[in-house]
Structures are given as C-alpha cells and as structure tokens.
Image (cartoon, rainbow over all chains, first blue to last red):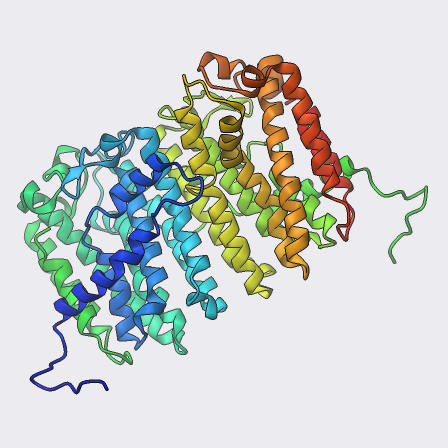
Length: 306
Length: 306
C-alpha cells in the first residue's frame, strides 16, 4: 500500500529526494569499478580513486531530476547517470595532467597523476571513457528499448567528442593568455562543460513517447543551467577559499585564463547567472512529471559554495 | 549482369581484394574527420594527422576478411572497421606520449605530440575514442539490426577498456625493467593488442544468424593471429630497420622491455608465430563464406616486413 501525501507524510524536499537517489546510486556505481577479469589492479585503483572521490554528482542529479520531470522510474536512469559520471571523471583526470591544466588538487585530494603517475592517469581516463560506453550498451533495462539506447549512446558520444567536451578543453587551453569576448567564452564553455550537462537532461527524454518537444525544452534547460553553473564556478574561483571548493582558487587569474568575472565584471556575471537560472526554470513548464528537483538544481547551480 | 568466375575473370587474389576494400574504405573513413560544427580545427587536424597517416589498416582488413568469411556485404562492415581503426589510432597517440613510451616517430612521421603538442595529442586521442562510439551508434546500416549493434558496441568497448587495451598498456609499462615469463608476456599482449584484434573478427559475427559457433571460431582465429602478429612485431624490432617499420627499432631492448625474442629466444619465437598462424587458419574450417583473405592475413601477420 502506498502512503498518501499528507502533512504527516509530505512530498520529500528536493534536497532529501536527491540525497536518497544519490545514495541509491553509489553502490551500483562503485561496483562498476570492481576487480574483474584481467584488468590490472593499479589501473582499477586509479579509476576508483577519481570516480569515487565524492564529487558533487551534479550530472547524475540532473539525470535523475530530468527523469522525475518526465515521469520515468529511477532504474531506467542508472546507466545514463553512471556513464555520464564516468565520462566526467575521466575528463577531470585528463584536464588535471601537467600538459593540460597542471593541477595538483582535485575534490580536496591529490589529483590522479599526483597520487599515481601520469601514465596511469592517462590510461585511467581512457579506460573510464570506454567503461561508460560499455555500461550504456550492456544495461539490461536500457536494452529493452534498443532504439532509445542507441540515440542515448550517440548523443553522449557526440557530447564528449571533438564537437563537445574534448573540443571545449582544446578551446580552453587555446584561450590562455588571450583576450576573448563574452561570446567566445560562452562557446568554449558550451562545449567544455555545457554539452555534457545538456545531455544529462536530454538523454532521459529518449525513453519517453514525446521525445521531440520535451527533449527540446530540456535541451534549453540544460544549456542555461550549464552556462549558469560555469559562470558561478568562475565567480567562486574569485570569491571562495580552496577549503570550500576542494581545488586551487584564483587559478584562472594565476594562469591568465579568461573567466566570466574578468570578461563581464563580477556584478554582471552574477546577474547573467541569475537570468540563465530563471530561463532554465521557465523551460520546465508543461513537462509531464514533477519538476521540483530540476528547479532546485537550477538554483543550486548559482548558489552553491563549492 | 554479374560476370562469371572464369580464367579470363578469375577470383581476385586476396591481396588485390583487400587493396580494393581498403581503397573503398578510405574516403568515407576520412570524411568522419571532416570539419563540422564547433569542433576546433587544430584538434581535428591532430585527429586526422594520426588516423589518416597511412597505417597498415590491419584491423579494418580483419573486419572485412571476417565479413567475407561470414558471407556478409561490405557496407554492413564499414562502421565496425572505422570505429576500431579510430580506437587503434587513439591508442597509438596516447602510447607515444612522453609519460608512456615517449616515442618521437610513428608510421614514418613525427608522433602526434611532436607534431602538435602533448595537450592536443591527449585530447585528439580522447576525441577519437568518443568518435568511434558515435560512429557505431549512428551508422544507418548497423541501426537496422539494433540488437547486433548493441552487442558490437559492448564488445568493442570492453576490448579497449581496463580489461583490454588500456589494461594491456598498463601491464606493458609495468613490465619495463622486469623479468617476466612467456605466460605473463602473452597475457600482456592478449590485452594490449589481442583484445582489439579479436573483436575485429568477432564483431561481424553478430550480424549473422549463427553468431555463437562462428563467433567462437573467429575468436580463436583472432586470438592466434593477434599473438602471432605481436611475436612477429617483436622479431621485427630486433631484425628490421627503422626505414622498414616506420618507427624506432631495437626499442624494446633500449627500454628494457620484455619481448618474445628475449624471453623465448629468436628461433622459438618464430616457430611459435608459425604454430599460431597454422592454428588460426585451422579455425576457419566450416565458415559459410570465402576465407581466402583471412588465410592470407594470418600468413601476412608473420611474414610482413613492417
């Protein structure tokens, strides 16, 4: 018997609901990195070190939030959330490498190549990317809808390739010591972080019967939240402490990296993030499910302290 | 009207047939790396530099040969061949990096990070891997058989992950300066190059109605050819010139890398490669199509001069 939504059993707060989803997500996610077959233990240890380092899990949260907004059950969403988090983890490892951003600190601990070594870090990233696609192609629930599964794989692969995340990191590195305008900075972030954040909310739409319209609304939500998230990241890089963020702060200025506060000014950056957050929330109108968590995540993107 | 196979129009030699298949393969393969959307031009140039550098195309050849042995048409094989060659190209780029094998020369030209830079080389490899899965998930012919398509994606992802290619490279790096026996050397190569070579011939079997038995035969063929290919590679590293191989020779000894000639002896290595070649050819018995090209490739693996 399911309990009624009464004052004594209210709908859980978005934050509590998210915490529950993420706590359900962690054990099967961790088990994807269990010892198996011939995989060398040190490589798996390096993959686990980064993937299970207790990040914010913003991307799985968006997947689960989008699923809720579309009226989907959590089990269908696991593989999407896991694959995107594996890809995100690989990108952090590679971005931190000496040849890239050369960061020693990540999520409050030594970056992967500092904890292990560069070769291991490169291979751990490579293997995490491969695992993401293996997870998507093997998931028994997704496999019940092979056409949707294929669209999801295609969209995620496209989001992390040369026209998405990898291309964005390339633009980011090219922007060091350069003066670029707001438009160029936005394009860089739309690729570097925006494409993967966008696919978090569009991928679940393939599991519905009304993919076109709902997918388009969620795409616009994802683009706005992704950009707002990044603007706020740049703001935190100026205003927060390393203890808050778990990574070096003032890193953009130290590296002569263009960032929203330096391009737009601090106040205009914060105003722009607010505007994008409102745009994102407006896109949720008319979705068939409960949009409370996606609303909360849009607000969180621009109010978080780390 | 199709021409009869008569003395005036004989079945083409395997070498000619392969040359024709590969010449048909190149233009659509190259067009996968065309400029599109927001992908930064320098990143695409780096991806093209390695993927279109005129390698042996051993892996696409195996895909097409397996397709012929199974009675499949070439169009169904393109995405499999292309994806595996993209993955192979990415692995060469990453393997050559200073933190890995630190090679300056590849396929007779500067290695990717020497021609571009380390960050670009890392990202080009990352983006090539993503593109491989995008190609598999987008191919219109594979998409006509979504269940086979999913098995193929799963197998290829598994072959290049921690329990396959990336894991093998990890074992390879760990073996430097170590004394290892034949069994450990074999395990390393079964992961590092064997898993991807194996999937070249097993993936097409998913497109047939008798996948189980034919796939198992082809898996054994692929394992034997993959190992024979690698033993011959180690032999060439001792006996050939850099001009022949397009990469530095005597590199194994210079780096204190265990190799088959140093573990087994030169004569026993060559005998083992011969034995594996014969085993591979014996596995082709009973396949429904023409196995001439797969026979030829097994011989080529141990007789090539580069």
